[in-house]
Image (cartoon, rainbow, N blue to C red; front, side, top):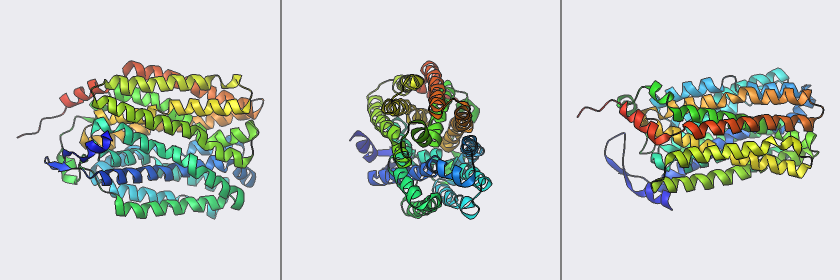
Amino acid sequence: MAVHDAAAAPVRSPSTGSDVRVNPVRAWSVTAMAVLFIVVNWADKAILGIAAQPLMADLGLTAADIGFIGSAFYFLFSITGVVTGFVADRVGMRWVLFALALLWSVTQLPVLLWATGAALLIGRIALGAAEGPGTAMASVASFGWFPPERRALPSALVSSGASIAKIAIAPVLTLIVVTWGWRAAFVALAVFGMVWAGLWLLIGKPGPYALRTPDARASAPSAPLRVVLTRPTFIGAVIGTFTMYGLVTVVLTWLPSYFETGLGFSRLEAGSMLGLPSIVGMVVMIGVSAWTDRRLARGASSRVMRGFISAAGLVLGGGLLAVLPLVGAPAAAVAIVSVGYGIGAVCLPLMSASVSLIAPAARQSTVLGIFLALQALSGLIAPAVTGLIVDGAASPAAGYALSFQVFGLAAVVGGVVVALIVRPDRDRETVARATPAVAA
């Protein structure tokens, strides 16, 4: 496999300036742990949607309340994403990821100790604060083992952790909720996070493409941060993924309820079907990302392989979702949501790889943290808007369909912006010219 061969070759380490040989087993082991980290992350996110109906019944909540709590998860999400990026660039990734995983487990406790809507809200806000840096930090941990032009596949694998959570973990959580109640599911998630933290201490190591020591990170030359953040590639990537991430949060918070109360499936069926869009998304993300990595290695344009491919996914996927209100058959509605979401999701790993390409090595955590924090701001809006739309609609089915149409059209607009302004190679050169030379 091309990526494996590239990983096995000697590379120049930015930490030491000398050639080192990458251990492919370690590279893919760290990547696997990064994927599992995101699985834990998204399982924590998914439980609100999976347990929405029993939580509403037990805690006396409305659809608007659940939507507000879903959005409240993102109150501090972006702030901590940015702050932790700066911290990680100074102290390194190993202990940051360990601390985050432990915090995720702790934040499951409030609603277990006090079964009230307020406790659920507090716990979700705290969990969102702890999970804000998650995707960026997992991506940086993996990227440290791969050169910039080979990062779309590891990025897709890390992104697929969300899909794995919905495909494999969501049905298990649904079964736990149906069999033992929602409290048991929250306990299971707390244990899951602690197990990951213990494994990470054994496996997690910085890669040769990372700046391994505080001194190396502090002394490495880097363009001013404003130069990176004002590149059209960065701006276009934020706009495109902002629209898609809003859709991601709607699916996570509301899809089981849509399938149950809108389309008439049972609670167990609805929770188990949460993974259907993610199956499509994971296949598309991994397949397309591996293909674009190979094409880039052979000299293809990054504007085409990163920008145009992402734009096509957003336009096609969003266009499919826009016709959902015209579809009456439940099976057809499930298919449209699954395919539309899955096609659009390809922009997430490709745009992360694009931002990583233009970011200096010394700024990887900071730049990716800011990028994903801005992207995630849509999570503040989308679940709450969906809850309001559903409460105000003539029927749950009509409300959910209208919500998907709105976010599908937003994705189309995002795709057009990506096609027009994302040019990673050009912006990488601009950033390089703004980077101070190292004295001999």
